[in-house]
Length: 555
Image 1 (cartoon, rainbow, N blue to C red):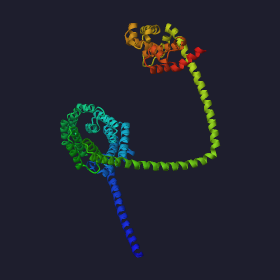
Image 2: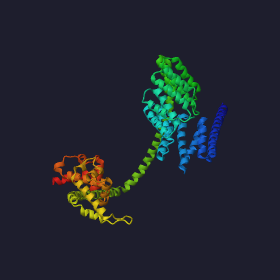
Image 3: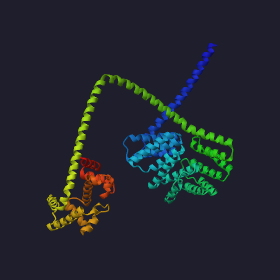
Image 4: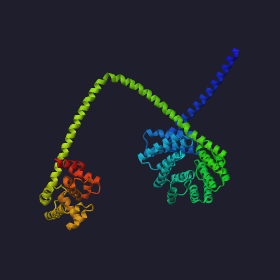
């Protein structure tokens, strides 16, 4: 009896070893295949890898596509030309596509899309941006965040027009119409349709015939002409001109046809259409199955068939749960595991740090106190210096404001001072008669600036000064530049700022005025511009000047 047990255990052990050996052999073969694939493709150019990856996607060879595009993405760490770097970003987008539609890993796909979009915006790679916004919108659409989906679809259509990407416009418009039919009224798809109609579509673009029929059916659907809409969707279904995943477009057209049948009360035909879609699907087309089951459930609900409706809803929620939660749970578990490891590492580091801290705590506290005291002293001295500087700038501004009437009454010394500035080697001094004429014009301008209240009108300009002086604006500008040493804008700004200083200093008359009111009263339309010019002229902000004026008034 014991011998039989031993033989049985030995036989079972041999079977387990054989199974393990076969599994290990397959794993090693798979690993060697990938290594061999990587070695063979490593010598190919980025353009060759891109073409190879597209062939894998068209043949729905997801593993080979991921391997090919991963090799392209890995080269981003090295030195690439601009063209090769853009192809590496294309590879990131295609990796997201494969993970989304072949692996149903939406989180990984979203990660690839968003990283690629951020990098495209950083380097100014515009050609890929419509596609990335489209794919991000698709992710939001799957999770029924339609507002976000439409936001990205709208951006994708705008950028498709801007960057001349008709292929992306057609796919985006199809997805937008499909979502509208599935989820109802969520915005204004007609705006996107009008952009599509106004765009000059090149010949031979994939999906152009399909989308043309789809748009015709959708417009009839919006009008409530469901028979005409059905006909348009049927024409779209029969005229699908695309090589990658044509069944998804065929399914959306048939779902739209079924929706029209439901609107017309033809539930039997709607059910036939929906069930027919299953025939052309692959096992991985779970995203399409979700749409079919949701439409089946609604159709049965409207028919009053509670049993079949419940069965359809069960399948809908089952696939949705398997789609999302299984992968999310694994990711959450990975995060929890990583956090646990990080907490253990942090606890170990904290223990070591505490042991070191106990030995040097007195030194740290002493140094900290010294630093705080020095910082307080520095802040006190800095504040005192800033206060003194503000006071000095205020006094200087007041002095300039009080000196201005005397300068304006006798501008000739200023003119002489300006004329005394050495002339550059390449410049010839103006003739004396010409200089005298310019001085006369400048003196007239100064007089206007000193006496006319029009200078505080926001619309006061060089043209108005020229009208008063009776000279051509160019000559007036020349006089201000050559005699006054500044341009008209600077001269006008200084006059207005000096008047603003005078009004703020007169606290008895203008003490209740706000800075914005004073700025507006002297001709500034923007407080931001007023603050900038005031700071440039006086060295103080209007608030600092006003505060000093009020302190001086108090005593």
